[in-house]
Length: 64
Length: 291
View 1 (cartoon, rainbow over the protein chains, first blue to last red):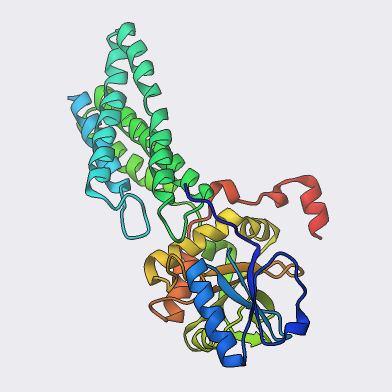
View 2 (view 1 turned 180 degrees about the vertical axis):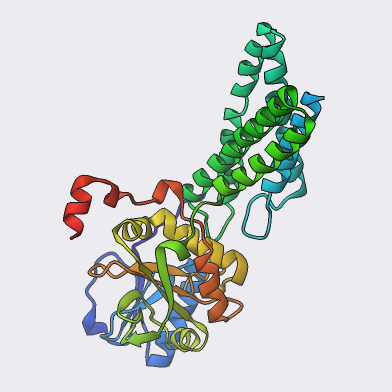
């Protein structure tokens, strides 16, 4: 049996630090959209989750 | 003579019922052998019953009843082995499907016993010519009983349109999921397939509502067309969601073989699971509420 956290925001990737507040979730700041996409893709692959888009410049990784 | 005919008929019945294409379990030679052997024993049981009673040998009959108990374990055996296999699957069958398969395997053995029983009875009292006729009818009847109904009988399956609304993936008007990455969206637009499964009546709507039935549909589709999901890359996971107002299902899949016509055909051939079958129209209030 392996244990993992699912249906939980594992990490947030953003280009706009004003959009997020500290709240117990890792927040990764990207300089531009391209870096944001690449970082979230890598994170998703590593964590076994998928990338979701909140449509306000925030991407987050979640495992289902 | 009667016993021999009964055994042959019963064994034949089991053989005919042992369909195994890529959708039907078992696909393993050893699994088939196990079931043929059990079918043989079941046929033997059924075949000796009538001659034993007619003799009369009541001890033998008692033993027969004891032996028949063994076939209840068939269901447990199937359920356990399928449940174990489930842990290592990316797309799971779901426990409804497993329960359905296990029950079918149990029922088949009883049908074998019946076939053998009727055949040996016919041979014992009427002669072998009648036994052949009875055997043929019994086998045909067993096949008829085992046929069950399919999604195609209870619902209409039509092609749906996969599109995005912002980051939301939709099939027609049903939201499937939120997809973040632009390259994933592009891939989905290029390779994704969407299908609508529209229930024909209220019973069908309840059936399609069950997560177990949806898992069964997805499992069957994936086991034939394949899917592009990997262990740690679940972005392209096939999903079936319902339109909460109208009750139809939207199914989304990124398959290895992007052939929409066959996808629709496959969904039509998915069995309706016994445990998922909706029966609201059989109840008084269900019928009242439906109109």
